[in-house]
Figure 1 (spheres, rainbow, N blue to C red):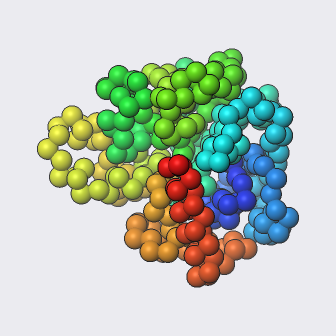
Figure 2 (figure 1 turned 60 degrees about the horizontal axis):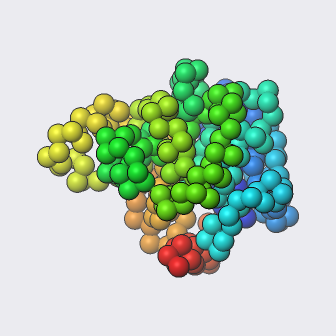
Length: 296
């Protein structure tokens, strides 16, 4: 199984936690993991490698993003190079990799991913789940109100098809000419460019916080209920395979009041990073600074 992750100095620890859960829940799977990254601090990279030094089922291939690749991309205080990493996957990974599973850093794996990996996407650019709770959002970026909008935290990518599409050059064109449409950066870009060309899959493959929202369960919007039932809403709640801590409420921050905190701590304890209060405060500060900058 080929997977790809994107990391920087702020998220490498959380990515390690995700990978520990992936390995533990897929013990019989040989995993080749492509790591797209900017310059990582030596002490952080040491901890990352230390976490997996005795694991024989996963092989890492590190792919450093050279700044020159992104020289045409607009960069600012709240739009970093890391923002574009997912858009670069088809160009950075070797040509012999024709299909790859992208996994975000803020997720946990709760069961085998083999069924997802075996999904037929020959006729699609990618497979993903709908972005739970963003059902009215497509209109905000100029799409039809009935369009499906996917969450980019878990994506099975058809690299062969995407390479022919020239994703990165088209993304840059969109950013430079229609930036007013884009709010959730690369996720919006992918949804705009791959409109009606991606395969919606069951919600169990990307269980986001909104799934547990009482407003959804008690909604009198029949169309909304039918949409979530179609994508296995009940199954996702009872048997989530991928838990996604989407949004600002992260399990490593102070005051986290979401789901699966104990499960997260279980996997975190198996990394070279150990939970501590000071680190949580630091993580909280980094997150708050990011939010403030994004509003400037």
